[in-house]
Length: 295
Image 1 (cartoon, rainbow, N blue to C red):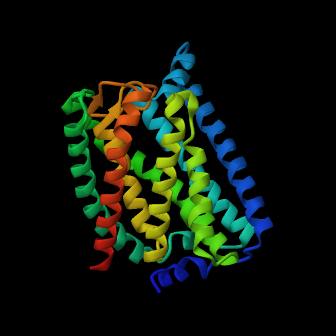
Image 2 (cartoon, rainbow, N blue to C red):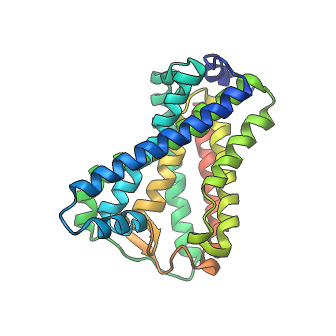
């Protein structure tokens, strides 16, 4: 069976009652909120006198390196929340949310290489297919100097999201409801809702959420086929390197980008024009990841 390896993640999923999962989600939200408040409070406390308001705005907009780095690292609270819920609510070792770690690391490397090539091809296709030529973001030297911070920050953000949506939610759901359509779609719907941001994307917010749902399905499929979080983290990591560190829309969340598109996230027409190419890139990356896992 194509999803037989998923047993490596569902096997350790103890106490799979749905009410426990609901309590676990509530605990994840509470832990994430608490850690977020503590982190931002600490950052603002350490800020030079009189600069707290400006720093808070910089974190909110993430259009400069410091604000973007803090925002990405703060997403680690999701992973801590998922690990806490696994331990407290389900009496589950949080390490089992990753699957067997040596295998997860091996699959991460293989998937990252294949998906990385596919994502670069997709990025080149987007530049070719769109009217706007990317503009300069950070200077190359500054971008390279920040890369040792950028890559770990993106890895923290993507690992935390995958730990919650695929490691925790998907495996705990599958332990209680073995029908694939349930544990493939429900975490993906929640993942999409987390990316639904009308205040940022305007009338394109629904289309962006649909893209996030399809990305969630791809990551969920890779997780079930491989039995570890390695491939899903790699797919997410590569995608966000391209979207956040290589070519990002102008304005919000462009603080670490080498290049920026000549439009912002609120430019509905431009976003909708790019979404088909984004979907093609996602499809190519998912297929490349599946091929890499077969080797």
